[in-house]
Length: 196
Image 1 (cartoon, rainbow, N blue to C red):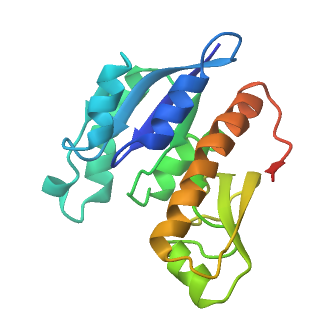
Image 2 (cartoon, one colour; image 1 turned 90 degrees about the vertical axis):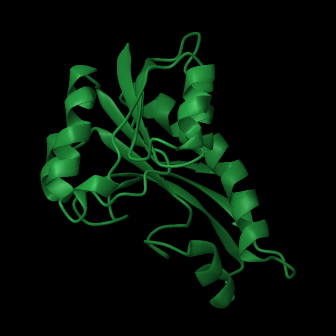
């Protein structure tokens, strides 16, 4: 059974989708939910699900990314995870942190990578006049939103879409895609999964 730590910064809806999928014959289980924001709504949702959680506020560390990472790494390492899932974790990780979990850390990004790495993905897709948007699960590497792709789900862009309406539809697909990819990944299958 693979041990999964999930890192969040906000509401934790992808964390909930992942946790609820890890039941029955699933090859993995959540052993920790960690956040950089003690006020993150996802921490309350983790508690409701009976999941162990920890928060390390990044703000007192200022620009000291290494200091923050050392503080949040202690409880993560104590939980002995096999896999790290970033699920709306809004901190850019240092190369040293990424190297520690190389090949074992996943992220979900709200665009069809390699299009639109970084922020404001839905606005950028609309401004570009794209016909579709979507989400991507990828391996975390030292280059932001650039690792090997393990899965994508596509969403048609409607003429009346706004960034908010598009984001809502993409989020629905994130909740389908991330659990499906994690199940395969935890089983040792890294073949990209393309959902329609």
